[in-house]
Image (cartoon, one colour):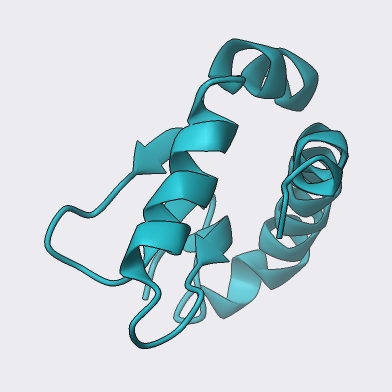
Length: 97
């Protein structure tokens, strides 16, 4: 309600848990490079016992309940998503899937 998030949600679907974890682990091997391009640490959630994984960054300037801060929140989210895409794209392109 009072924050937002940008993320890469990794989920190859039912019966593909191992492939999902392999994708996450492959990206995690480049964590330092990815975070250097992003410009700050990201949250890396392998989510053991779950089907999916996440690489995310919480945006704490506001959320959907903070209408007076929507403009700032949206600008911050757009900037964060552009940086996340730039940081992840070359690594995702190398994945064997």
